[in-house]
Amino acid sequence: MQRHRAVRPAGSALLAAGLLLAGCGDDEPDAAPAAPADADPVIDPGDDGDYAPELDPSDFVDEIDNPYLPFRAGARWIYEGTDEEGTERIEVTVTPERRMIEGISATVVRDTVTLDGELVEDTFDWYAQDRNGNVWYLGEDTTEYEGGEVVSTEGAWEAGVDGARAGVIMRADPAVGDAYRQEFYRGEAEDMAEVVRRGDAATVPAGSFEDLLTIKEWTPIEPEVVEEKSFASGVGVVLEEKVAGGEGRIELIEHTPARPLEAGSGRVQDRSAMMSSRPTRGEIMQRRTKIIAGAAIAAAAAVGGTGVALAGGGGDDSEAPIRGTDLEQASAAALEHTGEGTVSETEVGDEESLYEVEVTLDDGSQVDVQLNKDFRVVGDEADGPEDEGEDAGEGEQDD
Image: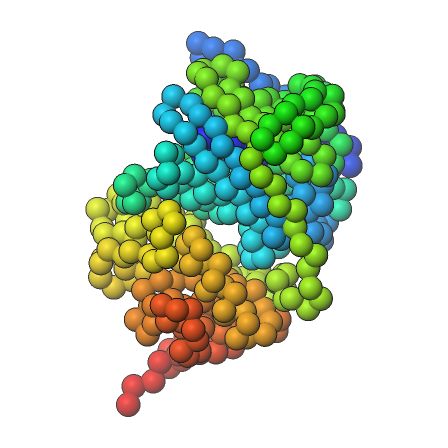
């Protein structure tokens, strides 16, 4: 999880009647972690270390419209605050992209953090809402930077991979006293939450808000730190304050609600066609492996810049996903070219062009769209829905 914790998930392990929990699945999860032996846990989820939610894809809907977490495509939040390290700015945007996780079509939310103007973290979070209105947190792909260089991907996880389990970021009807797990991936993502108050009021640069929902957050990974987040109905998080383990306050500066989706926009991907394409744990942690191995890695686009700098690594190690505003422009150009579908993978530094965007069409087939530095289409290549490029004699032909 991100250490700033600005608008991070507030999940649930033991949900009340009406939530979609079941017994253990086929893979036995690791036991849930305990707080350090010399300290009582700040939040007790009450599961006695037995946490194994099982999700049914048919119980989920495409749109996230929970009033305390309205994650509709196009919505945007900007936060600013200070702590011991400096002035922090967080930008959160609900992208039009989707990701298949355990058969569930998840909304992709991008969260970038700058510290004194320098990019320090870039994260893609995955959320989905069930039919009862509970918003689940299904994982994240997070990267930390120093001086434009990738330094860590710790905290990245995906539900159903390597023992990681989903949590609930926001209940449909949160009640004071509810305590629950937000997520679970041992040693990486173990956040917990407790609803502590309703009815507070707060004034921040974005405006004055009343009847706030206040949730306390804590993790046994950083047991000395406790934070509270205040949520306004129809907006989301408006205020975050550190109440133990240091000082810090982050406020909502600007909120842009989502624009109505156009009919036939093609942003919601077909679940059945994409279920088999969920990346493995190794693919999620690709950049971490490169860091540990000491290989060259991609540097993020500088804040305010327009390009993406790449460090050579040779072979497949030189590949990196498109990020930042480049990702938005490349995705838009590729989708306009195909006329339908969902962006399922991106690559900067492709040998045939500067950018390559893989679009999964409604019939499950993929189209790789190549773009130049001006985001103009310079070529494309189509693959069938069953083509994974592994069968002998398929894919490439030598003259």
